[in-house]
Length: 69
Image (cartoon, rainbow, N blue to C red; front, side, top):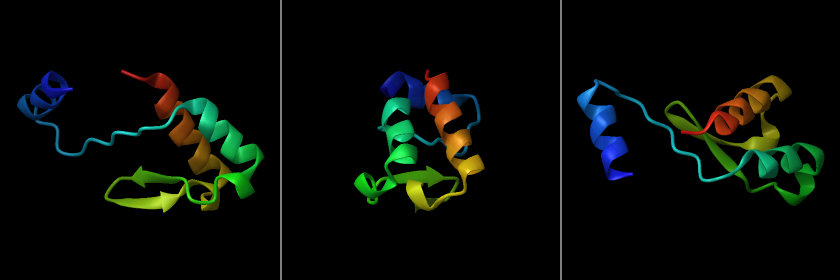
């Protein structure tokens, strides 16, 4: 992780979002939002409750999570 962060900064990165949740959990939150009401995700400079996001925004977050490192 330390090397990743150093490389990111060295290459000029200015916003890095690190999510500590897997795509499986996010899909489950879509199917059963009542069980995941407190699940928060980062969107640029702020965080939001995943289950309150529009379906399209949820899908974008899932795609980024599936992409991995």
